[in-house]
Image 1 (spheres, helix red, strand yellow):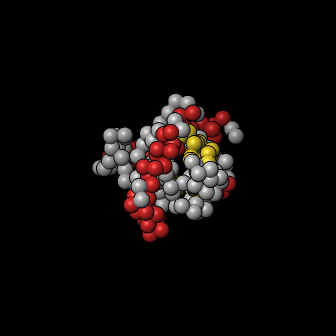
Image 2 (cartoon, rainbow, N blue to C red):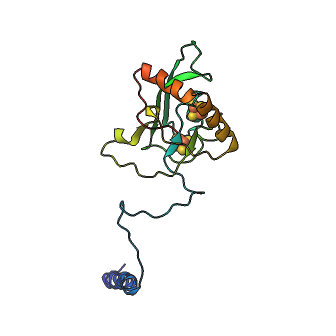
Image 3 (cartoon, rainbow, N blue to C red):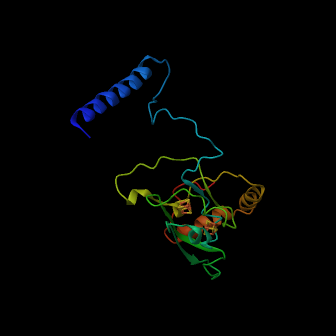
Length: 184
Ligand code: SF4
Ligand code: SF4
């Protein structure tokens, strides 16, 4: 490309950019907001945010972790007081971490869950300074799960009626894993 052609392209594209900027300056309307004080509404149907997870209803079957294409769900569990095995049965969740520096928000971890205790939620903000800050320790309580299906509603109702939330939290607390966030 000749020198003059490059010079002309530079002038032309700069003028195009200025015309675009000028257009916005003369238009009336709001193009930015004062985030995080102000936020835009999300589409509740299509939005895929940070997981909602009910640690108390999770049976540590690991189906979600197996379905994850990037292996960013880390699960560790221990047998409960009746000595039940930690895979696929009632067990005490000792670690349920999701690494959001790897998560694709694909949602493949959600359908295989037999307890419907994990789903993609509405939260999207996870500020941090290190890679470790991007790992959410859901076994500390998870984030409140929205009851989207009748099956999930009935399971949650049963847990509340039979006081199983309290029981599960005590089991984890006895193992030094306190519930730091409410799970319901
Ligand atoms: S949304 Fe996708 S990438 Fe993220 S934890 Fe679930 S399966 Fe893994
Ligand atoms: S699939 Fe559901 S029940 Fe199984 S470990 Fe994952 S969240 Fe827990």
